[in-house]
Length: 324
Image 1 (cartoon, helix red, strand yellow):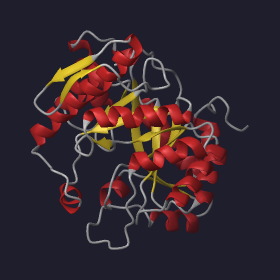
Image 2 (cartoon, rainbow, N blue to C red):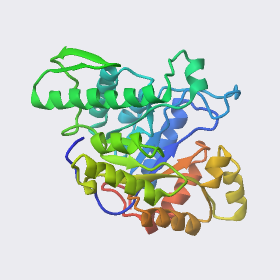
Image 3 (cartoon, one colour):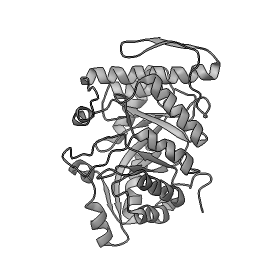
Image 4 (spheres, rainbow, N blue to C red):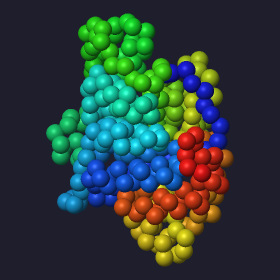
């Protein structure tokens, strides 16, 4: 965990979840629209398969490969994954990948990491999918290795780790991220015990996901911080909000129909810009200082422009360097 202090105010970020997959040029167009509209960051999911495992139209892309492209093809917005699957990449390789993209972006990358959950996706691509307890163990150990390597790069020391899932043997050439001391780490989820405990140790931002009692989730995280002697105020708190915003009822209906699942629809902000701003405000009242607006129709760039023009000015100060 890096020594950072949480800021004030709500940061609005766009989180891409393509309904049927995507190509890089589509991702880039959405990221540039996000940047032009004045949002703080552009994040993407880390999936190789859509919610419907039988959707033969889904076009998978690798998360960090595309973020590397965006690092060179955007200029201001922060970039990251919400959240990466700890099952997908070995810890030492992940540390190097993220450090490389951070350098490529000029220090605009954040690492979101979780246990991984989509068993069918793993089977379809030949990736092992351990039991739940093992996945949590792997996540905790992976964060130990990634942050340990990055700290070693800053201090000029070597790094070793002899764990159950990862072994690093005297690495004296660790990867160097551009950010000092290293990119912000995001950990989140709805679990009541291990997720907040891991976040308290490693995370600069705790993501309370969506649905349920968000304020209680943040309170559990605060208690987890106190249990390890950490000031809870040193971490940001974020939430996910599926969104379908429209200037008229027809736009609202069309965009609402694209939202991917009953769970997402039940927790979505579907309505006018005022309605979306109100929902963001309620998340802020629960303790969120960062909100990820979950979008599904990645070709609907007018959606991003509308939220940027009609919602963003009312709920958050524009980030430094954003258009006025």
